Length: 353
Image (cartoon, helix red, strand yellow):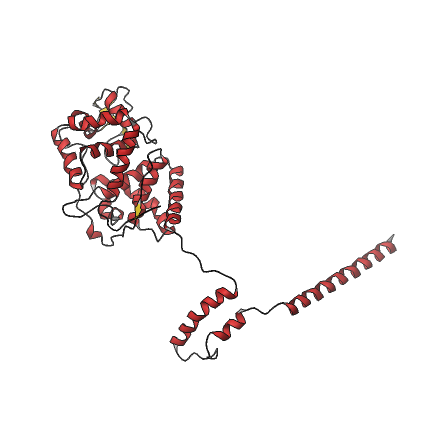
């Protein structure tokens, strides 16, 4: 038995040696017949200077420039193609959707951020609006109406770092569009090309966003306050009511606005429920709320004084009636008004295909 084992082992050793020798010869043959890398040829077509000639930085720079295309050709490597605008914003959309999946309440916050970024516009002075993305500055985030939006900016910072060629102003406006569409709203047109303002001192003064209550609940002062703010931006009564329909989304938080509760029972779904509920339910002042607001019969939903103003003012109410009856009409009017809102304070934009 031992002799047989020894013989077998010897045979295996010889066979392994033979295979190894054959493999070595094959590698040597391939190496001998393999064409020399074209990169060695490239070195000789760069310049008539010798490789050691480094007499001037300018010559070395010119040599590098001349060498680059030849290197790409030598190794069959094509220069990287710059991403199109459509590809860049498609990538931003995916990132924004991931944030919304991780935090369902983030969608309404993105809409609020986009709206507050644009809502500072003054058409007479040509100041404010979404053109410079100034809401990212701590000076504007400190405005009363922007409480809590610093957290939204912080969550968007990784997306901005991944997409340095997308301005903050475009990013803030675009994620608002994404949020509305992803939550069931109308398809919105978007244009890009906003240029970031780099000077925090360019921030507009506080007080340009609408107040929920001017001190008289849904009375004349609050109604006029709505008109003052929206007329300043260039909107009319119909557009004011249409844009108010975004209150179908999200909820108020005590640590942000001081108000508490959702406007609708589906705060993550963009639809015309805001108008249906505003018109169809009986709203009464909520004595338990810290700030003056209204509650529905169940006590689960709320409305702000500025919301109730829309059904107590005849010129506003006629549009509430239209949108409560037809979601299609609401979507059409909202899309037009929101697209207009997001272009306030901008110029030279390009429509995204």
